[in-house]
Amino acid sequence: MGEMNSKLTSKMTWLQVIGVVLFCFLTTVVFMHNDALYTQPIFQVSRVQAGKKSKMTDEFQNVDHYHQQTLYGEITNGRYAGKHLAINNAYSDSHAMDHHYLKGQKLFITLHTKPHLHATVKDLKRDAPIAFLFALAISLLFVILKWKGVTVIASILVNTMLFWIAIMIDHNNDGAAVIMIFSVLAVIFCFVTLLLVMGWSKKMLVTLSAVLAATALTILITLTVFALTHEKGIYYESMQYVTQLPKPLFIAEVLIGVLGAVMDEATDIVASLATLKAERPELSKMQVFTSGRQIGKSIMGPLINVLFFIFMAETLPMTLLYLKNGNSWQYSFSMNMSLGMTSSLISGIGIVLTVILSSLFAGLWIKGDER
Image 1 (spheres, helix red, strand yellow):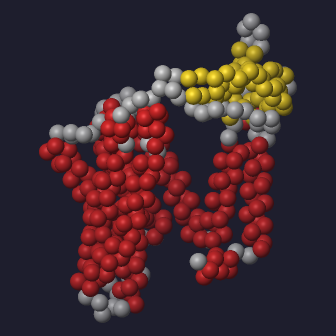
Image 2: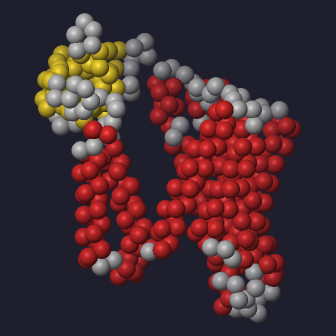
Image 3: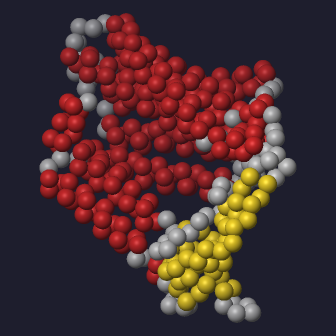
């Protein structure tokens, strides 16, 4: 750990540190004073008056407390800028569907003009802290990775735009070809990301081949198992607010998730094997393949666990809510965690296949002069 910290600090001068701090500070200040750019009314709280407190208990003996508060302040943008208002707000200790607002915060509001000008709170204005995090991430990428940081940021921006285009196409087609749309998107995602991050090289082509082959084979195995088991235990009804066929949407979701995990693993394995082959050109194809399997074994376990935690953690709040409202563990798991567990298992299959395919393709195609 000490060696890693020394390498990091050696790459960053005091001037760069000051530059990062100033960039983050200026970005935050700009977003804290950008109210005029919004068409939606914004309300700045200057004073908060606490109201009465009441206790609520439901049939399952869950206890919560509700609080009344009055928010005093002024509108900061739009037609009614400078207008002072008092807005009533109610919030609970659990904050399940509400929020406790504080002095100095800025809020998005909905204005009502009849019978007189008044407002209700929609949500908290959060763009300043989000902008600070983005500025910090971007500046650190520039400072630490130099040109590589630019390519990473470019790949994120391009992929975000491609993802938005795919969603728009799916929306305009009412979900009729969601798997086809996101399959094409996955190929483009993979090609663009690897091209920007690794550059055009045999190593990039080997990684691309391994990623696409592993992802395609994983989805094929998934569809085969679903067909043989008639999808027993798969509760698509737990996909809340879905307005199109849930099965194709779930497959598309798994496809993108598997692609991310597989790309990360394949890049590590192929890059390591390319370096190994360059340093020891006498290694045979079988020795390179065996080395790739050893590398895969060391990173496969942590990667599968990370994906498991990501898939399961996002379902935890709703699962606890189900349990607190008298539902059995089996029903709560089925309605909230079953799809996350299925996604984790499918991703695990993809990760295992990637170890084999990356090692195989690297052994067959990477020569001693390919870095």
